[in-house]
Image 1: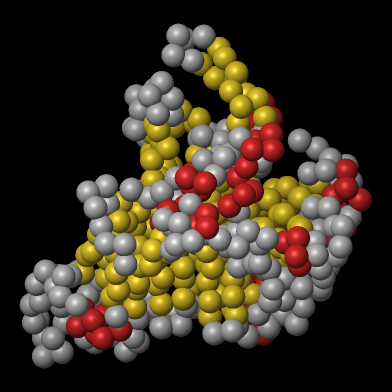
Image 2 (image 1 turned 120 degrees about the horizontal axis):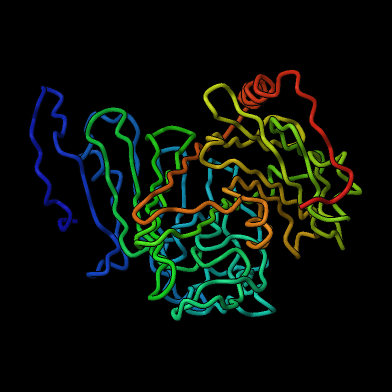
Length: 411
């Protein structure tokens, strides 16, 4: 394939290292290829001294409600990460050998946004396309559906119907670019831009990037939300990161450094003492949600972990509480056919309705032109020692603090 060989190679050593990074725009308002491949053979030309073969490919889907959806599949030599540019550059799943980060949703297609009706079932239409491992909730709002106030184009207070978890996951990326660093360790980056904007309304922009090093079992997500309008604007972001088997199973455990745990419902309150433990698939299970006040280390960072019953496989998320100060755990250990899943959800707020979060001062605002940056490092653990190391990091943050478990629902 010759169409991408427009970059210049300059030999700066006997090893023949490329002096200029590889850049390729694969999705653009100005047109792009529906199918595209950067093969392992071609990546060896880009990074000849890289000891690990990696590849990237873009695929167009067809059939049913996924007609027109696109996937971008990054294989770093160990991890295979599948992104969905059509759905806000969410992550469909992540695979490491036989281990998969993801879940088996009743929604089997990668649903194109043109088939979505977010107002369906009283504002719950977001669920019609929900099957990703990582799906962003936001940007104007990220919580429950229902009426809220806003200022209309006449300057008057009016009422609008918010839909569950907002719009950003059902907005296609307008620009998607791949960058490969020619210098060791040859970091691979996928960047995209998604706009949530309208006349007489929010003008929010999400610039997102996922990056990883060839051969590693980790990757980083960095998002920047910017208010492109002149007036101050509310925004919200929640990372809905969802796990099914093999990590989620009877006896699996959620580990996080916390000072307070608050149940989201009366049903969750009855089982608050077991908030960190999971059942196997359970017919008729009703979701349980818990809200956390997390603890941070002296740098302001925290780590949370989900591991299987044997504690020899897991995934940890490391991020800054200055950027994402609130944490939610969603437990939905229903029958497998109904969606056996749990969600680890760092956010700028809790997923209450926006008017509730506003009441408690948990809805941030961006001045005109201002930005907010959020980063998460994802590490996949494939041995008991790796899980134990992550657990020790969390224990060090927890220290001697004893978590307070609220026995009743609070907002």
